[in-house]
Length: 341
Ligand code: M6R
Image 1 (cartoon, rainbow, N blue to C red):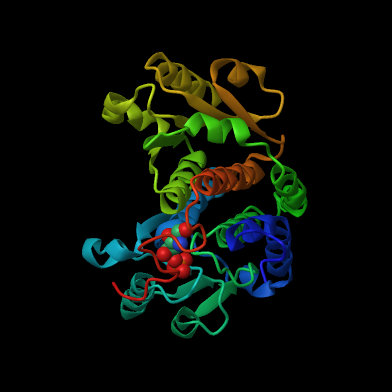
Image 2: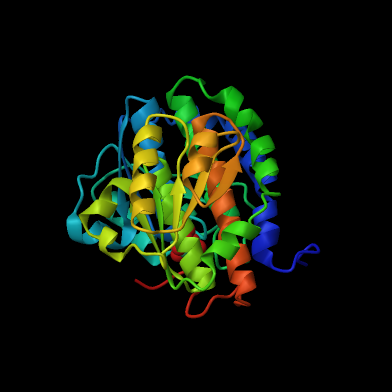
């Protein structure tokens, strides 16, 4: 059943090139997406990994389109009463997360059009929302979400592509090749550097901030190492006090707008003794020279690199948890879907 893999999580990680490709192709065929005439103001509600994918969506919408999108934790939606704009999107792999379903109901009560982004045909959210877009991830067995995160990114990138009049059709059509390549990333040195760490940080900027949050979530849920995801600029505002030789940092430093400032943040963290695993682009000797372990992703469109870096971080969590002999597919205290508030 695990297709020769030791765990469902690893099997599902390996399915991601196909999942990304299938989701992008399905969206291209789904003429309803363009017919939806994506409104100019959107609120997204989600939990956990789905929330991180939605945060990445916000960065992409902001960078590449003229629309406005805000993201809310579905569990907080009811307390903040966020301005419900032209459309509310509920994002949930299972389609059964109680808080996300409640957010959709709250939006409907305010006469707001609703869209579900889910992986499960016939799930509760598909019956509640006005429209549904399916991710083509296939059944996800492992409690830790991996391929559903990638499928959510594919849906959002496909939507951004529609909003940007097809500007990203080409990179999205080829993204599966880069995703395929990172599956064979050698992470032995990175896992070794984590050693017996009990606490660690993940940092990034821009779209790589939610990618860092998701990397940290994967690490904590399956390895039980206390991993904190941070926007790199926030470290100085408190967490720096925790940095020492005992607190490894995974720093995402990809060429683009945030590159220079990330590079100096890495140097600052290094100066405080923190061992650094740098995630950068192949051939980047500048990042390589300032980090302890350098892990690369292929050169590609920055949007695609958000996906490839995420896959590398899933693998890092997987191999670390495996080295610690954790119950990877069924981490303690967790359920695959959270059907109570
Ligand atoms: O089914 P959903 O996408 O609504 O689930 C939301 C979260 O419970 C889920 O993403 C959770 O954070 C993951 N299992 C983490 O890997």
